[in-house]
Amino acid sequence: MTDPAGSGPPASPGRRSGLGGWVGAVLAGCGVALFALLRAAYLITGEIHLLPALVVVGTSTVPVGFAAWLWSRYPPMLAGRRVPSAGALVGAGLAGGALALALSGLGEYAAIGTGSSVSPLVVGTVEEVAKLIPAVALVLWYARITADAGLLRVGLLSGVAVGAGFAVLETLGYAYAAAHEQDASLATVDQLLLVRGIFSPATHLTWTALGAAAAAGLVLALQRRRGVVLAVAVLVGTVLAVIATHAVWDRSETVLAHVALAVVGLTALWLVDSRLGRSTTGSRRTG
Image (cartoon, one colour):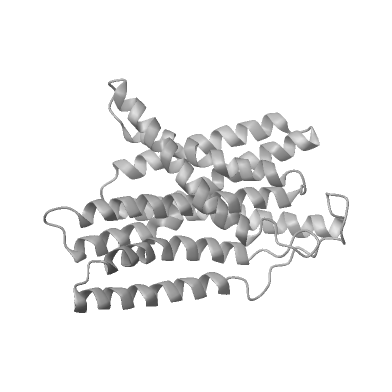
């Protein structure tokens, strides 16, 4: 099977390296160590200028580590290069996350301006659609050079990247607000970072990844000119399921409910990820 762009050597086999995941593990380990060091320094010195660094490291360790872990599990796709590259995903995470946060903020503000209350369903709809926009843009960019399971993988990884960027920036906002409350304490910020950090892979990262992978499936169907109706149904069903899950998450107030929703989300992500691994291997063998 040759490079879809028409040049370069055949793509490497679709087997995952036994070392896949070490990148995310190293990043997560370094992040935890840096967070502990910054926290100790802040407690000892009381220097307020250490707090922003503490919050940034605390909000980004788990989402970035998870995204890097998932990316490192996939082998190079085209001419010995990873597609999407680490640089592309970092850019998608930063720019896409910021764009999605701005769009969701404007969307929720518009809902308030019309006199309607911002219900969890409205918030879920606005945020999930906003995150899909930059993720799908990256899918369309790579649709020029890759196809088959490779494009679906781009959708999955671009969704994880944008979801990670959104989760980090949103948590930074919550942490900033918590740190400036009159009765705020470091323990309050710690709890916020801990809860949102632990659950971030199962929420924003997973939700956006599933939606973007389904969108990539539609793009692939349009490229092949077959299965378009099924792809549209899958995309609509996936987005509606993600929005509903987001709304239920926001309405739930118990840890047990969040754990149950997290298990459902991560299971769905694992199933999609496993299917992509099998389809990639099969396409390489028959190519």
